[in-house]
Image 1 (cartoon, one colour):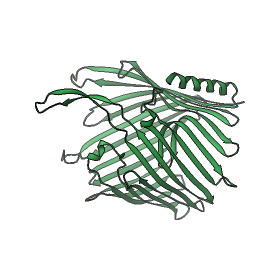
Image 2 (cartoon, helix red, strand yellow):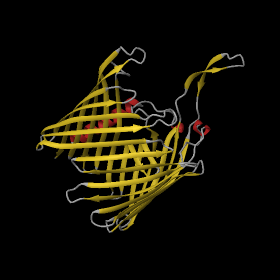
Image 3 (cartoon, one colour):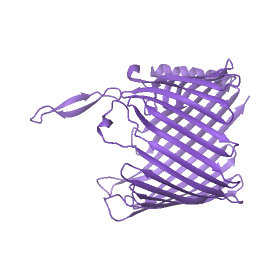
Image 4 (tube, one colour):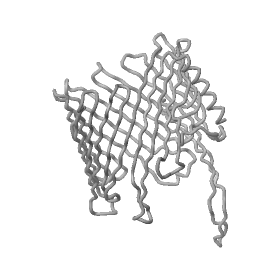
Length: 430
């Protein structure tokens, strides 16, 4: 299965590339260095360099296309894990507006379909109906993508599958709504473990084979904008298997005048736990959060904002306060938590400046936090982190990033890391 899957998409890629009308590619590679101390012998230290590569490729030919997003990583100095890993986040064939009514995706893809979210290896079909295609029906199904995003053998499809759909309506100006459904089963891999066999505490090795946990969810989402000035969004999600309303949300963003905006929101959250998993043995409760804020934009482009929200638990609450200002080139923010979630204060500032027009730029960021670790300590702990970086772009399609990072806190007295990145972008239309 693994070899056939790779070979099939290799043929599709080669065919589309050879006859492509457009090719869009982004490639980047980063090298990250750090030093690690041994957890047993503090005087023993090892230096590490790890490389990361990302490739995004989109090939188009008429109504058909091929899309992939790949990441590889390897240890250049001193192996940490396997030494090399790869991930296929996207790997699908797509057809757009086929027969003027149908969109198709076949392969590895990420779902954004109301309650249906997650990576699947399968088929996604969207049917558009109505005079202005205001009615849209999407159905999807397939195997769940492995958690490591590799291409390998799948578990039995009866224990590892996902299917669902979403109906979306766009028939009213500035308003859209959707109703979605998902059914998912994901069986964990069996493993060996030592267990007591009798009252004499004799130990034996057993195979732990857990049943396939299931999720069956339904949800509704809506968006509305009034005169392109006031925006409203809401959602309501329900767990069918557990007979629980587990998520509700409403957001409003209202323009009081040209430069002043008011934001208000309310959220309800119940932990969404699969139907037949061991996590139901732990106690859990829902919580609510309500808040709002104001932001004002000055004539020079600086946006000043303030937000406050209250997280409401069964017997307690926690307050969150945020104030600050931001600009494309600089900004400063302050955040405070108090109450049940603990006491903490944090500040973050950033600065960006173009040193040579369209060629060289610099960026600086620094953060500070002071926090109390619940009932474990009466004293507050402090943490400081920061970064300084430069981006050099000799030509529009190529750039070099160099960044230094540091952090100091209770655990790390002084930790420094360095990142070197190379980025290349190509767009070709034939």
